[in-house]
Every structure is written in structure tokens, then in C-alpha cells.
Image 1 (cartoon, rainbow, N blue to C red):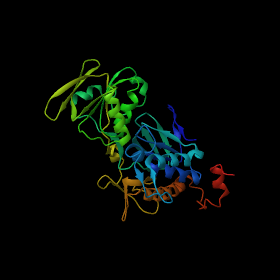
Image 2 (tube, one colour):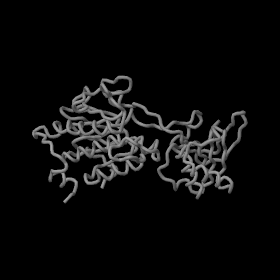
Image 3 (cartoon, one colour):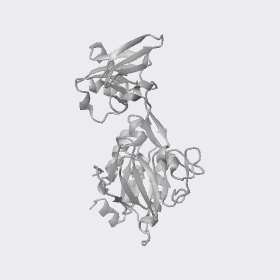
Length: 347
């Protein structure tokens, strides 16, 4: 099965590093495994799936061949299942900070201190990396990462605490419902209407009626107050009237913004935040660095998951000559190759 890598200070040598664990990166990993190459997969998010799992896990997708309809979550789960035989490692909540060329290889350094030596780097991170939209008030910055959070990694820290959640989408609603079981939850949204699933909206209203959730609509954040620790949040409505809510934690779920981040410093021939590539193997202007998915551009480019799959398949083959310079790549059909069946554990 796929592995989530633990802490290590050792240099990791691999055939390829994939930057981005969305559908395009996952399918590219599968194609690398099919041709006998190893890879490590790094993603800035805390979960696998990229845009599909973070932005529209329940939204129907209609352009996957032979799949009339599936959700982003279903597509992600199927892609994860597809690469399980290869035991690839995932490094989540991490980001590639530096790329340093060393002879015929690339030294890849991440913000969490991981180091990889590889002849191939495949950028599959959408249009850069995803970062949460943050509160506009400066006072929230003081508690950023401690009491003011934009994602949840361990829900047990909120037990018996006062939690104020801002947002009107699925993430805000789902966490408000979940945390209300063991916490005092206040849900704040700047509109009367919510963007989440109808069933979740109905559940929120029921919990509000039972006083299990304090619901504030047409309110937004005004101030976050506290000295050594967070004490309260002040919210305001469209008329300027304000309320103060006792808070141990503040959670913001406003969606994600896409940032190029360190990619802009890697010496690539960027064109308006996208990376030009050739259409033979989707290599960039840097030898051994490939770009696939929404972040790459070429004549006739279509920003479809289908296109990303095609790009990932060709990029994987392009990696072979750098990972195995003394071997000749021999194309094999998956339906007839015993070698590929062995790699997939098929008898």
C-alpha cells in the first residue's frame, strides 16, 4: 500500500520526485511504477488529492474516460488504490523549497528538512501550491498556527474548548457538526445562505435550534483578542454592530489560493505563472524537470484531468532515459506484459 513517510534526516535517492499529489501527479506515479521506476511524492496539503479532494470532493466530474460520473473523492480514492502495489511514499504538509543541480541530478530540499537526490523532478502541483485564504484582520496573525487555524490535523485538541468557526462551505459546516459533539461551537458566516451540501445546512439549523451550535449569519470577523493566549473574537454585522465570543480556537475555512511560491525561483522559463514544455515528454527548459497538469502550457493546451493523465504518461517515459541511462526503454502493452503484471502483483 502507499506509505506516509516519517521523519528522517537521511538523503533519499530515487528515480523521480513528483511535486503535487493531485490526480495528474497520482497517475504519473502509476506510470512511473508501470515502467519500473521509483518515485517520492510531495504535497503542500495535508491530504492526497489536490484540487479534487480540497475544493470539490463531492462535485461530479464527467470527463474521465469510461467513467460516466464520479466525485473528486471517488477519483482520488481510485487513483490511490491504483498505485498501492508500488509502495510509494507521500510527504504531506511539506513543500519543495530548493532545487539545486548537482551534475546529472537534482538535489530537492523541502521546508520540513527532507532531502532527495534524483535525476527527475515532475511538477504536477496545479498552478503552484495551495495555501489557505487567511483572515484579513492583522490581530489574527499573532495566533496563527496555534489558536488561529485554517486546517485540522488533530480534532482531539478541541475537546471541551470554545471554538469559533468562520465559513459557509462544506469544510466549515462539516467541522462545525463534528466538533459540536465535544466542543462549544460558534459558526459565523457573512451571508444568510450557505454553500455547503443541503443536508449539512439542515443539520446545522437543527443543532442551532437545539442550542448545540451558536449560529451567526451576516457577520464577519472584526478582531481577535488575547495576550499570551487567545481569549475572544469580536464579530460585526453589515450594520456595524458587534458581538464578542469567548474563544480558545478560531478556525477559518475560506477556500484556497494558488501560489507559485518557490517554483518562481527555480530558473524555469515561466510565462504568466505557467511553465512552457515540449509535447514530446513535457520537459521544461531545464534538463530533468518536467511539468504536467494545469501548471504547464503548450500550443493547444486543454486544462482537463484527461489531458493531465496523457501528460503524466509521456513525462514518465521521459524520465526513463535519465533514471536508466544505460538501458533502452522498451514499450510494453499492459494487457500483454508479464513484467508489468508482476509489478502490479497480478497473477
